Length: 339
Image (cartoon, rainbow, N blue to C red; front, side):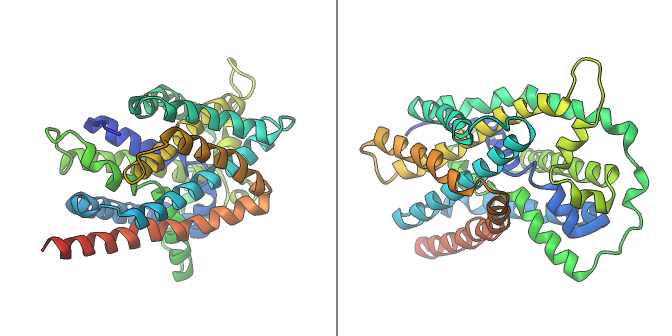
């Protein structure tokens, strides 16, 4: 599979995967774990995120996957997509489509990914462009809540305990999911376009402000008790807003979220199949179809609330292995070999 990415395509792909797989499952668990000081803790998490990006940028050339490591990552990405589809399908069933069979919703989401991944690589790569106006519209809708926020909810400051620090840092890793795609696609970026320095810092700030805004809005709008009672604070916030041009903002946004889900599933699937084809160049159509059949079937076993919660908790620890531990080991081994 031959393709090249511009700098903007690369950062947009990374941003969509990082936000699409975790944005709506992030604010409530993170604020519940860290309390009122969650916004301070996220600043610390963002610094670690930037340091990880700098490490990736300096060593991406040493990150080459052999067959065994590539199979590990394909299993990881399959787990990520299954977790995401189960979470999204459960949420859609609760908020917007209670009478629609869940396998139909998953089938629709996966079918678009199947079509894109059976087409040219540029089809999947260019899909994130469709989300730019939709994400801007979502951020615009959230502005209707400014009149209802309580700015003093962030006080008192500095009362976070050691346990809350640890739990908050773990929950904060949810916003990192997908960052390993930096190592996968960095070598595909046009060598004439610089990444390190200002461009990488701009991406870091875009990612940071996007999640930071959701954390602050959750703290400002809900009491600590309220956050525990509302599993989807951003959707609930939109639902409570009364506007003249639409009856329920949350339902309108569910359609945006559905498109966001489709693009994220497509990109993660594209990544897994791209890595797979580096070592298995034959029967590409068959392998693509098998991958998407798994994406339809496997999430159906995890559509209950307790299963969704279990996957959301487990994915953090699995992410740490594949975003930090394995890359460090692979990079260290390859550096030693080249020396």
